[in-house]
Amino acid sequence: MTSTAKMTPSIETLSQPVTLPCGLTLPNRLIKCPMQETCAEPPYFDPPVEKFRTLYKTWGSAQYGMLLTGQVQVDLRFLSVAGDVTTRRESLLEPTISKWKEWAKIGQANGTPVVVQVAHPGRMSPAGAGVRPSDMPALCPSAVPVKMGDGFFDKLALDKLLGTPKEMSVAEIDEAVENFVTAANVSKEAGFSGVQIHGAHGFLVSQFLSPYTNRRTDDYGGTPEKRMKFLRRLVEEMRAVAPPPFALGVKLNSGDYMDADAGGLSQDEALEQVRWLLECGMVDFVEISGGNAESTSCKLRGSFNKKSLDKAPKRASTLAREACYAEFAERVMELHPKIPVQLSGGFRSRNGMAIAVESGLCQLVGLGRSAVLEPSLPREIILNPEIPDDEALAMSHQIRGLWFANLIPAKVVGSGLGIQFFYWNMRRLASGLASDPYASVPYVVFSNAMQMRVKAD
Image: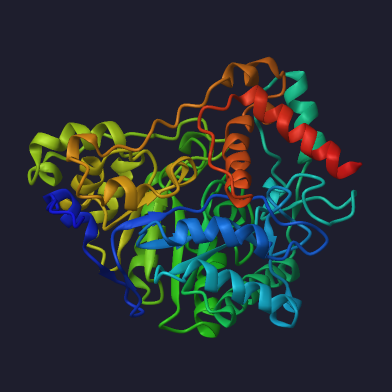
C-alpha cells in the first residue's frame, strides 16, 4: 500500500539537500558521527571488510545525508583503542587498497557519501593499543602527562596506560603530517567522498591547538598563530593531494580543552581557530562537538540567544534541552560562515534537530550514539512521515549498570566503561546481530572478557 502521509515542516527542513563547496551534495541534513568500530585486527589493522559489510550496509541504507567513519589512525604505533583501522604507505598497494575500495563501495552503495575521519591520538595513545615497542612513549607537542583524578590508583593506572609523553621533534611533526596526507590519499584512491581531520577530544591536533599541552617556543607554539601551524599544514597539504570534488572537513572542540584559567584553550581562541577554517577556502564543513577525558568544565548546554530562536519560539525549549555545545555553535554562526557547520551531541527529537537548522544554529545535525542504538533511525523514525513530530524521538542514551564503573578505583579505567558499551554494540551490528540498548555495563565487561579469553585460547 502506498503511504499517503505528508511530510511535516520539520521533516522538510531536515530533508533539504546541502551542497558543499567542493561540489559534493549531501541528500539531507542528518550526519552519522564517527564512532570507533573497534573491529580491525593486528598486525596492520586494515579495514575488516567482512565485518564492515554488514555494519556499513546497515548505515548506508538508513538515509543519512553523510556517513563519517569511525576514527582511522594514521600511525600503526599510536592507536586510540585496539581495533582502530589504520593507514600506511602500503595501504595504496594491493591487496590492501582493494579492502579500502570494498569498504567505500559498501558504504556508498545507496548513494550516501562516506567521509573517512583520520586521527592521531598523540598522548592519548595507551600502551598496548598500537604496535610500538613497550618502552616507546606516546607523542605530544610538549611532555605534558594526562591528569585524571588525584588518587593513588588514578596515578598508577595513568602511569601504566599512558605515562609521560615525549615532546615531538620537528622531524616527528613532519612525519605526522606526512601520515595524515597518506591517509587522505588512501581515502581518495579508494573512492571515498572525503576525509575529516579529527581535531577534537584531546587528540594530537587538539594538543597542538591548546596552550595547556603545547608549551613549545618554536614555530609550532608560543602564540595562537603558531599553535595553529600544525592544523594549517594538515589542511593545506591534504587538500593538495585530494582536491575537489573530494571533501575536506575538520572536527573541533566546542569550548575549553582545559579550564582557561588553568592554562588551557579559551573559547575566544577556539573561535579564532574556527574562523580560519571557515575562511581559508580549503575546508568544506566544520563539525562542532566537545569534551575529552581530561576536561573539567566542558559546557554541554548553553544559554541561547533569543534572536536566533525567534523563528520558532514555541520549540525553543526543545532545542535548549537537547543540543550540546550550542552556546559555542551560536558564536560560530555569528561569523556568518560560508561553509556548512555541523553540530553534534545530544539531539534526540525531530523537532529539536529541525529547530537547530531553522534557527541558524547549524546546517548539519550529527547523530553518534543514536546511530549505534538505532542504526536505521533516519529512515524509520526521523524522516519517516508516518511518525508524527511528537513521537519522532531517538531512544535515551542512558546506560544501565554504570554504577559498576564507580567500583573501579582508577578513574581512567572506570570512565571508559560507558563508551565500551557502544563499542560492544557496534561489534554486534558488525556480526549481523541487533544492538542491545538494554545490556548492562557489568554484562558488557563480562562479555568482552570472555571474547578476549577465546581469542587468547
